[in-house]
Length: 449
Image 1 (tube, rainbow, N blue to C red):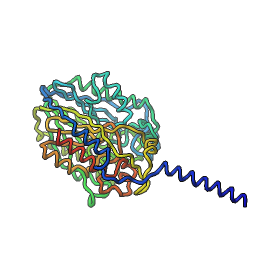
Image 2: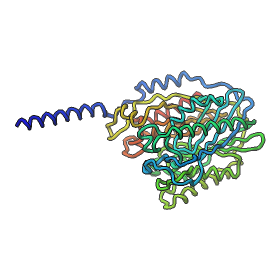
Image 3: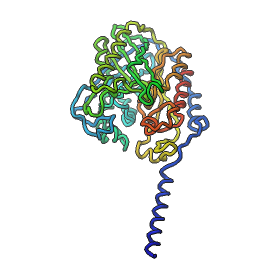
Image 4: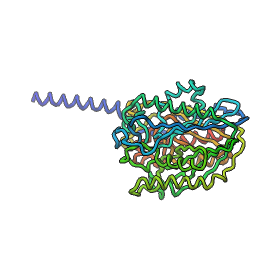
């Protein structure tokens, strides 16, 4: 009997310890309306206080440059956890940093596109320190990536980062930052007077809703293009599209820029320079996932995009630019809501331990009546109609890009929040109501910019 009592006390003690651990580790999902929460009110106050630049772009100039981002020896690749951090085995095609610098009589502003999965937060932190060495600062820089799942890894400084991008290596972070600085410096040196035009082309046959299917969901089907033409006649194209760069699957363990890299190659045969950024890629995949040949799928998407763009390029008329401004907004967010069940989540300290704790921003770049909104996430194409409607009412051409130097997971449409899927359960870190919250922020920026 005494032994049974001792065992009972031990089991009771273990049960109490488990309950204490669970109490400190998990919590119910907070579904309070975002309008009623302090983070939303803080963000709204910040946007209300924002005064957009009134400066005009006299003597508008542009310059561009490309720098090879291919490392001297294999690194882990980022994008597929199935690779378990293994270094790539070969180089299918090189990866690059591309920069376009715009300027007027004030500070220059630069667009930077990298052939990377995301723009790593650790690289952002380093760039904020090192940009001053070339006469820039972070307030002048707008970044994005092609979102290829076959480029450099080793840049994630936490458990989940290493799961998707391999073991962290500070040398890789330094390497990426240095290549970005080199591209900006070179682009800044070859500026001449220029004009800019905007075009958009429907490519609905090249993208599908990978979250719920096209019968239940929507996509953002538009190719969006900025055409920059120097007074010398040289032409650059900046393009965005919303299909994930996942034509090359996890079994292809080589370095590659995926379909965006092939698209840029093809377009560059007809113009002097081309750059690509992932648009509203959340919930969106490239058509042809049923093909057994990844390379055929890549070819179909890249050629489909390039053929459409080159067919329309002469119809995109350029004009003088009278406004150039870049604004950065720190985003206030709900506590992290990483869920393991529909109504249960891990507490914020667990999230920060596994994922890290980085600030999040939205960038707003205005070039004439063209506005680029840079988001720190996989921004869903299903969220585009409402923000495009506001942009149209303000006589603005809107381009939304993902992966702007921070990362807060997937921002999906709120009607899917309780769907038990990768995007909405595993990677929707700050919901619920994050879709409409981000729409609200973008709409307010557009109405004031």
